[in-house]
Image (tube, rainbow, N blue to C red; front, side, top):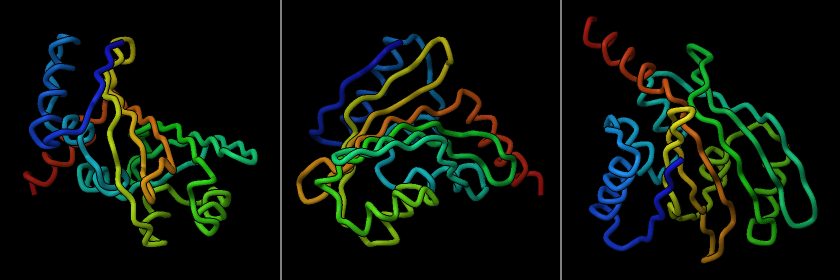
Length: 177
């Protein structure tokens, strides 16, 4: 497993350098779709739906709560094919999240991106690490969602190794129509 720490400077070219560093250390060449997924700072559900030409569904696999923290494991899948695109583990730091957002999270019926957008919560996503797991041949990233200058959520997303086949199939299907 190879992990590259990301420190924000000039985010555009700096992230490109970090992805190149990951490729060199892992001895791999990432397709552009995986580079986009590693660098994306908007909602993952939205970019996945665009890349796969399919709505996505978020399945909450496990969620545990205590007074300070909610831990949540989810998979994001293509609504069209049912195939898992991303597995994610989130840590919600409750003291840094508004109560109405916490209540929505506890319902387990929406993904984080849709909750944030639905509540028009002002946030910033800061990518902390990117990596490559040679055993599963998958890429991953860890990032923070910052609200009012504090870490509200920490997320680790593991993108399935066959995510490109979902994207390429959709591109080929569009070009042949």
